[in-house]
Image 1 (spheres, rainbow, N blue to C red):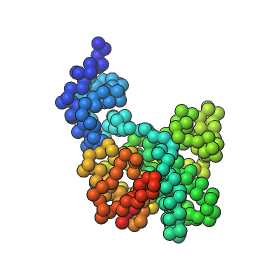
Image 2 (cartoon, rainbow, N blue to C red):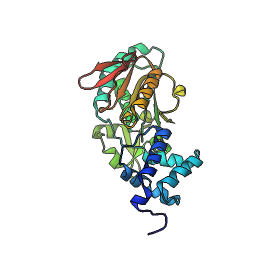
Image 3 (cartoon, rainbow, N blue to C red):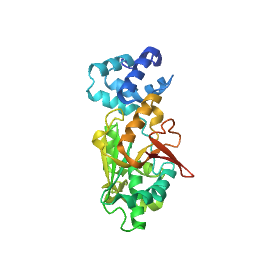
Image 4 (cartoon, rainbow, N blue to C red):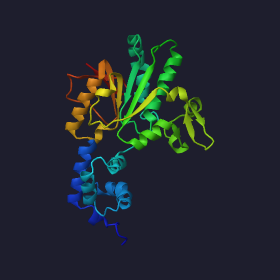
Length: 284
């Protein structure tokens, strides 16, 4: 066996796995389930080999010794699920266009519309939101006169760098994007990739943010999309995040969660709004 390439059992004992689970939860809130050693192996094996670490315990020790090392970001990045697509689950984007924007736009006055896309990955969600805003403004001339701003955040610097470029391969473009929107909102590059147009891209500002950390620098929002990320957190962390998201929402602002996520036992903060199909939450 090549030195540094340990067997599955040697590298991922239960003791080592538990230590890594604790590190990951403390670092970014992600709570790995039991017996997910295979997931850790598939995502970290190459990183460990490159750093000459022969076991998971050695990796944890290195991360604890050097908490500000680039390795910490690389490991968290590798363990973060960056599954995403355009207009994911479609209903939230229809609700935004046909219910939320008609309700909020007349109330904004001289204030710009502000939307937060949390855990934005490689940018498909905030750019999808920007397309919705573009189409709404085209249909309702003179609306949103003070402008719109989408703040998109993620814990992984590498995916944010990709998102900022706004350039995608055809495989990524094909995941949820219609031919009509591809034609309207993208230009094909000489390299055969697809570049999102400037009028869609300029609305979005990408920022590095760990959801466990403070949101105070983000400001206040009319709408927050925090979809398909809370499922990775413990119940306690989930409640804490939802409370702090409420602090970023203006009264009457809306929270969008993922299709498999639900907000319960927080009636003092949020009111459920049935949209049929779809559910959103209004901040009290």
